[in-house]
Image (cartoon, rainbow, N blue to C red; front, top):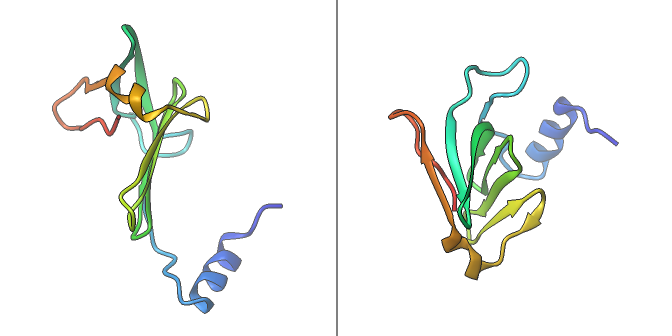
Length: 110
């Protein structure tokens, strides 16, 4: 079931939670062009476009069109990196490299 944005904002406001967030959406109808990155895992590299990047006082999320994503919880500082919605083990994070293909962006992986 999808919740309508106005209803969600009302519920969050009534529960004392902030409904504000900052997002950059690079999908169809969003901001363009999307920033490009080279993401490598264990020697295999892909050119990846950022799909979105969102942050608020509770969390941070970012995703790339080749299957990588990252979620962080602000309160604890804990982050999880995912490949196609499967979490990457902490001991494998050193096998990920990411670099922006322009000077205006910073990669948020790992």
